[in-house]
Amino acid sequence: MADLEHTSNVSQDLIWEICRANNAFLVKRKSAGGCQFSRDPLNLMNKHSRKVRLGFRWLQDASTYIASQYSGFINNKAVGVQPEENGGVQLMTKKTRHLNRPAANRNEILWGRNASGPKIYKGIVNYTAKQGYRADLRQEAVARASAVRQSQRPKKEDPEPKLRGSKAKKAEEKAL
Image 1 (cartoon, one colour):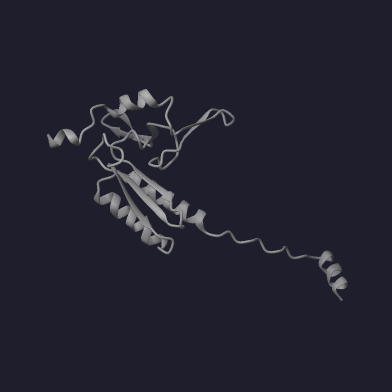
Image 2 (image 1 turned 120 degrees about the vertical axis):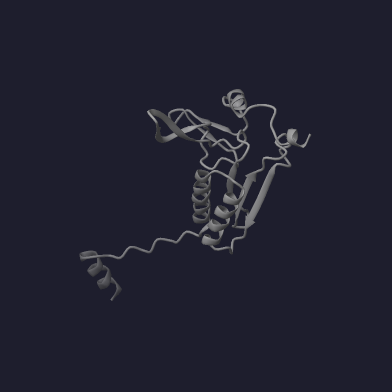
């Protein structure tokens, strides 16, 4: 009885085929050539895609492709990184338990705004590795956390440009 609780009744591919054209996370943009993006918090790349071809690996005269699955609400195990309101970073993971109960199958880890970047990145790598998440998701999660930290830094104002040549001489004469 306990094993049935950990498995989904429907395959991930069937769920994707049913809801790929219309779902709550889908963002369609006709102005950019028909691009489709995703607002799914468990989608690290924000691409509305089930599988993306990354490269080829040759196995005994047969070519197979390595695929990366971005859609978080479809996959049984997913990782997401979001900014925290107070300036921190939040790591969200989808558990394999309670797949049919969305409120119970998420795990959240928070790092405050005072946590250093390397500490956050190491925490993300260690947590995802120990829990058995895919290595490509691990790299993308660290990249996303880095981008979130970069966006939370205050922007420096550009210094006033120095006058050079004849304009500098004219400004010096006016000051005297």
